[in-house]
Length: 246
Image (cartoon, rainbow, N blue to C red):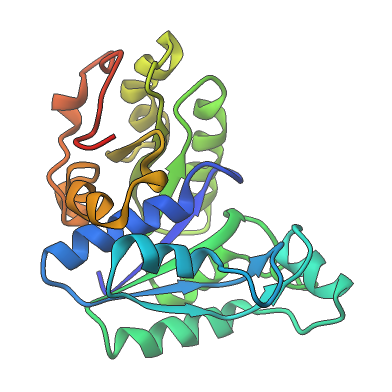
């Protein structure tokens, strides 16, 4: 798995922090890692982007950003409004392939969800994943409503012939409600793919050294970690979980 594409069921589900955790676990396993942010929106040129945040938390990764647009919109819309060139799926794939010749693992982080458009032709992260022949990791939320968006994303991946590696809960609440606890079992059922981790709420606020030390306990072995879905809670996950450091 030299390239892994990371998407989410929507915005603000924890894609960047999950990308950082996967990167940190891979680094701890002795792998070289590159992180590619396909398109960064909503930031000025002098502000730190998602790739920079991954590098801050995870450590010695090669951080690359293909395009940046000032307004917090879908990349295609943001590019058009800024009169800037869009980033296209083949450019994402080519950049990831180049990084893969120099690193053991390349993490490609999308913007928003799977079908967010990068250009006026309707190019998406799914198109980039297809060009790369890369598996996709889906970051999802824990609570009410996540089953629908997760199943829709999983169905779309399969309809496009893409490999869904698994799911990660991007932020596990400090005080999870009943829906969140039940969703630990229900999410893999509706997605038809394993749950490969859960990041504790507030993980991104940890000091980098603490983040790196704890990250392998948040993701499963397929992501170079030691997290265990069965140990996390069976049919209903624990009402409180520190994830090692939070």
